[in-house]
Length: 287
Image 1 (spheres, rainbow, N blue to C red):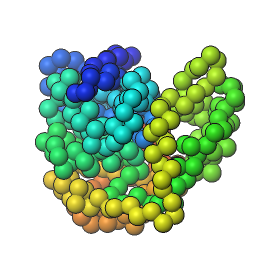
Image 2: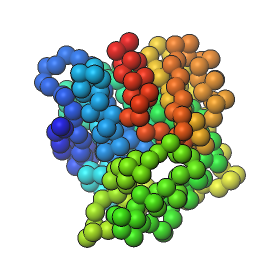
Image 3: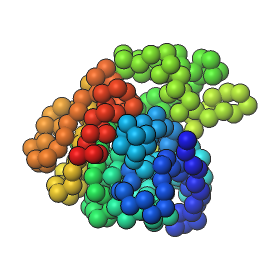
């Protein structure tokens, strides 16, 4: 269903990616999937399976684990868990796969990395899909993420993990079923002696501890404006606390061709494989 790949960053750190339907010399512009702050390539599995199918357009997909997440190695230098370094790793990944232009799907942190790439390596981006992220981040939503990522609590067992996640996020994701919460647990956690453990270096979440209610987040409008000639879609969760409707409206004003989609019944960040969303993404990619 997918192939696993390991390759080296410029500084020698071992990185991981999955590919779906990727063939040498295929010619079609592939899709590169970039996950959120502490998430990994597993988040995109169901969407990638659909997009790689004939119904989804037989697309070629590469889904990445950033350094310190999933099956990529943890970095001894914690300061290198930073957007410029992770953007450089993505450029390295594209070179590894022979990709000189791609559609990028960036969820949350992935979308922020895309803003960086739009300013530093614009030729690499042929199309962009931002999943619940934009040039302005709502501080209240980021503080919520700070708190739950740095909580000492966690599920005591795999059986308890879906209900634990529902307790954290259920208010923002009323559309999710019991199966969806179980799938989320399998994407977020890795197994450690029979216990689910968050699959990222804790130092990544710890970087948010410096945020307070008085913190000032610099908007990324200059970087967003670099997308002006790039076909773009933005998905916003109906209950998102990170991306406001006002920001999406300003994005649409600045980018006349922006396609906007609301993920009904979801918060931050939407699961993109749900019916309606995956078809909208497929239509955008074929268009």
